[in-house]
Amino acid sequence: MVIRFLASFLAILSLAGCNSRSTDEISLAEFGYTPEAAACLSEALYFEARGTDDAGLRAVAEVILNRAASPEFPDTVCGVIDQRYNGSCQFSYRCDSIPNDVFNEPQEKARIDAIALQMLTNRGEDITNGALFFHAASMAPGWFGTLNRRGQFGGNIFYQ
Image 1 (cartoon, rainbow, N blue to C red):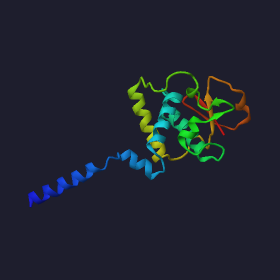
Image 2: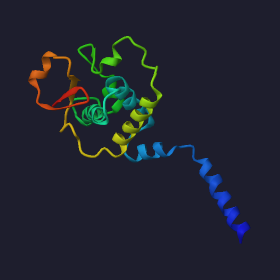
Image 3: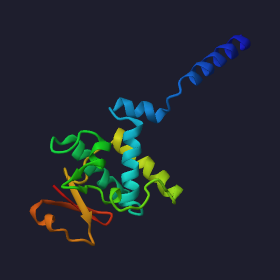
Image 4: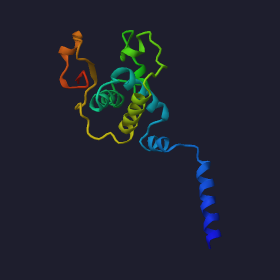
């Protein structure tokens, strides 16, 4: 009986090893996202909002996801992040001439990766109330006066 149990257990383990997809990938697929979408979102959060609290990171993610759901913007996370408007990048880190492949803060990157995954698989209520735009609170771009302010999170102000 013990040998039969061990044989069954080993067979299950070997079958489990055949699936090379991670749990995160499976969860992402269930919600219609790819690992590339998670990587794009994580990168944008890292370069646009690292060092802020979880609400600040989540709010930036909300803008990206709200844009992907809007007919006014590209319909993918990566498309939204890569979009240019009148020759300008929508996300400043894409145009600042600083290499985007360097993540100097592994703990911060891990925290941001977890928030990105959560936003794609278990988003919950939109804390920005549908925001499609944001800017650093320290800036005063001319366009902000034409939009409805939705709140301030993590050093950024959010608008719809």
